[in-house]
Amino acid sequence: MNSAATMISIRNVTKRFGVFAAVQDACFDIRAGEFFSLLGASGSGKTTLLRILAGFEAATEGEVHIDGAPMDAVPPHQRPVNMVFQNYAIFPHLNVRDNIGFGLRKLKLDKAERARRIDEMLELIKLPGFGDRASDQLSGGQRQRVALARALILRPKVLLLDEPLGALDKQLREQMQTELRALQRSVGITFVLVTHDQEEAMALSDRIAVMADGRVLQIDTPAGLYERPKTRRVASFVGSMNFLPGDLAVRACGQAAWQHGKADFIAIRPERITLHTDHPADQAGAGQPLPGRLTDRVYLGERVQYQVQLDGCAQHLAVSTPNTAPVVADPGTPVWLTWPAEAMIPLQDD
Amino acid sequence: MIRRHHFHRPNRGLQVYAVFFMALLYAPIMFIPLFSFSDGLYIRFPIEGWTLRWYDELLQRTAVLRALENSVRVAGSVAVVSTVLGVFAAKALVRYRVPGKGPILGFILLPLVVPPIIFGVALLLMVSWLQIPLSLYTIAAGHIIICLPFAIATLLPRFEGYDAAMEEAAADLGENGWWVFWRVTVPIILPGIVASLLLTFTVSFDEFVMAFFLGGTDLTLPLYVWGQLRIPRAFPVVLALGTLILLFSFVLVFLGLKIGRRGAIKLVDRD
Ligand SMILES: Nc1ncnc2c1ncn2[C@@H]1O[C@H](COP(=O)(O)OP(=O)(O)O)[C@@H](O)[C@H]1O
Ligand SMILES: [Mg+2]
Image 1 (cartoon, helix red, strand yellow):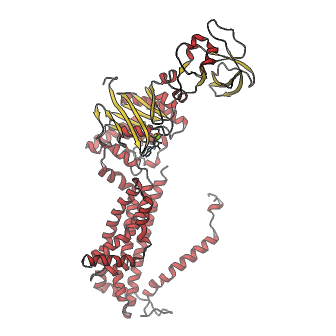
Image 2 (cartoon, chains in turn red, orange):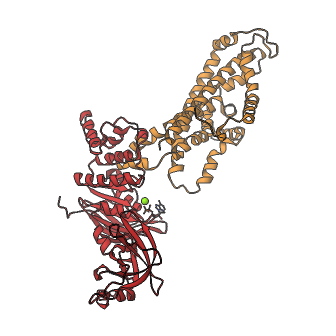
Image 3 (spheres, chains in turn brown, red):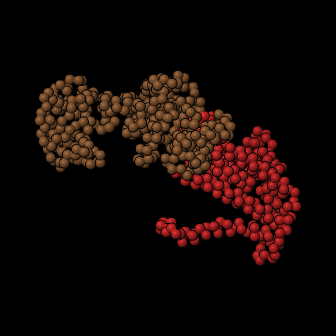
């Protein structure tokens, strides 16, 4: 399979519940073999879009093609996709083996082949020997793995995952992120993941679609979203971000920095700002350092986060520095801020 | 030993109340088994002697056995039909956005509180208007109306107790509606189905008023008992029969509740 080939094509899909539009005019492609995420706050329409792909909801307008075939008239049980449900939906009356092998009935395999394929999946999810466990004797992480195996055993073209790590605690979640990514690479299936956790989306995905109020705001790689957000909402949703009016930016970096864009305002990542306790020497061609006052310092372990109020205006900026270079200054101390011109992202009002 | 929080400690007043309540409820009923073993023909203390002969006499009567067979046939069919209808009704009520769900539910449960005599008379009018001969079938039809609310009330919590995503997961794994129903829905609600079967069987088996209005020449057990009450000599035999019916009903309802509850606990304990 050519990695640039399109696996899912979503064409102007709108879904309305009554008059309320849960998904509005979604229009994008997902490539074969890609790990694709739908990222957005709760209620932004991610699950609805995923359920349209699975066939549980019908699009009010628009159409979906999977591997070139139109899906309009195809019911969920005939689509070449499988899903990991939000709460895993493990069948309570079946043990682990029978949960994983549930979808094999129609393949009419003989007993040995069926057992072999289930064992293979148990191996893949690192739960060998768990086959005879009752479904109510599994931990959250184990349930998640069983749900994965149950969906993957049918070798779907696309695996849909609805907040698969949401129910797990932080440590387990990070471990499962690594495993999920490795699993996707090894099986080579297109994954479409729904999540509200931007770190999770960044860690896992090849590309991310950021959604809000049923609309897709931007689709890009994790680095692209982080470094080149197109709108203020995307910028504030992915990582933390400072927004400042253009004139402040001009003061800080000189007119030259302002040239690239007729932007309404400027966005700067906290970690791109340098915090000085002494007035730094002016650099040729750049503006002056912005003076301010330290109002807060939060120790976050590997990083230290500062809040700085700029002199002469109400604007607060967040500054984040690695723990290797902590600034030892108490709130109230005067400080100066500088940043390189390329750290500034011009944005339009949206 | 687990120390109990005061909230879970046994409550004296409540225990006394419970015993009093049970005594009031069951003491009168207990006269039936008691006197069914009495040697005398009349109900009075002191009991003169003990005997099993009424039971023996009971089993000699072919009319009793025929009535029993009729009752079992009616109750069996009623249990199956009302449970099947109950499964679909409960599923529809829980799973689909039925407009006016509240009123519909109230309407379905209405036969629980409307006197059977009203339903009995109404059905009798309808049946005679349609010129349908009275038989065991008309009795069964009447019983289904009475039993349906019991079936639905038993099954509703089973559907409410599990995530609709189970059925979607089965569909996602390639099963059509029919197979989803058999491979996922039925096994999950099975305790409710068994409980409903037992409960509706008992309700139909014991029912008198509808059977009285809608019955033809074939008698069910309660109708037979009613007929025998007019014969004073037959009374001890009726007591023996009553004792057996009581015991049988009690066991069925007890089993039904136990199975229903055990299933519920198993599902809830999952997380
Ligand atoms: N079956 C439905 N009927 C009515 N509204 C719905 C239905 N499903 C979802 N919605 C609404 O659509 C919006 C998007 O929901 P959803 O796709 O679940 O969001 P997300 O997964 O991003 O949290 C929400 O406001 C939700 O209330
Ligand atoms: Mg969701």
